[in-house]
Image (cartoon, rainbow, N blue to C red; front, top):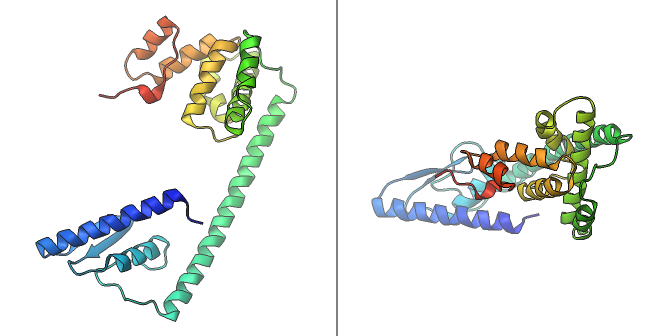
Length: 236
């Protein structure tokens, strides 16, 4: 099933092929470019739609080598049958990868749940603030942030109860807690909320700022009490 993003990307590929054809016609040469792993050749009189068709076929593994500059106008019954056989093979591989991914994800979740089964609840410094955070995030997206934040904090608590420093376990616990596939923005929400509500939140804030900084902005944020947002940092 094609998504809106796929359709937009495919349109960009077609536009690129048309630009290549225009340049080839103007300069009277064969243009060559790699498009998503497929080497495409066009002349000034190449057909953009046919080039795109075979670029997609090559991208799916139906054909090997370079595409163009003059693909056949119509695919034969033999071509279509071969494409179908390869696609069926590709689909079996995709299904196998999906099964393996789900198996690993399930094992990871079970390991984390077992680790937290008898662990203490989140240690709060601001219970009212935490409750407000939960009340304001009851939809699927916000709820995932709440669940992740609590799980991350509890995993760090388990490690600290075993004598480890927060700064030494925060990153590993961050990855271990990530069962939802959180985004960068969701991570920022978790850090900001835990910094404000969790018993060990200020240490987490300071760790995050130093880990995130490019120059010394993390040190400045630690002095001011702020939380760095990595998406706003500039490398220039």
